Length: 280
Ligand code: ATR
Image (cartoon, rainbow, N blue to C red; front, side, top):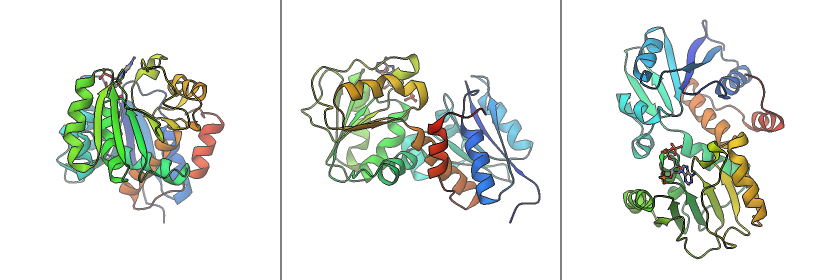
């Protein structure tokens, strides 16, 4: 049954103009018969807390949060899910009527669902290479380890940052770390690019060698930002490669489920996005 009045939801980020979240959430709403008003809000880099507060006061019931505000959103949440606490980042906020905020992080669950359900990859027992040790890598590491791989090796341009992340997650599974120039012996089953190098149209400085041959290569970014890594993967003889379109839609579906109590179908929406990014 449709609500009497549409609930107000928004995604906050900077930049935000190219966000696909409003389009995705409107499709979810239409599919599940919910009346949802979902907009994109550009918050000033030093003005996220004020923008969120104003939206909440004006009747906002939920917010998605993207770069560069996920860590700040974690700090601004009154209460968080265990997975958001581990990620130290929040991409989904429930804005409660009593003025408090509940924070969750659906990025890792979205990635895992895309890898295992949509792409049919078996992660248990696999050898995974995670490139990058920033917010994106941190957000997916816990759920990746929970899938039971033989090992996750984190390789980062700044090796120390990778080691610190691995040390923190060591109690959750077999995780090792080092610089990009000192990768362990391959082959890997899955190579994930969680660096932001592609945003600048470049590749991380990856060492030569056939260590990605036969691996499934996945970029957490989507659209043009994923292009350099996907092209590189093909040239290396990767088994297959995918950008993060599926992760984007699956993390949105998790957020939608948290807010509305129903998980929408994602297959057609992923396919529509892949056919051509729609105008928002
Ligand atoms: P995000 O939240 O997108 O992860 P971040 O926390 O700033 O953003 O982290 C960016 C990640 O991409 C880091 O792992 C960064 O490496 P450093 O820790 O060495 O800075 C990585 N990165 C960004 N640009 C890169 C490039 N050109 N080559 C290699 N790694 C890069």
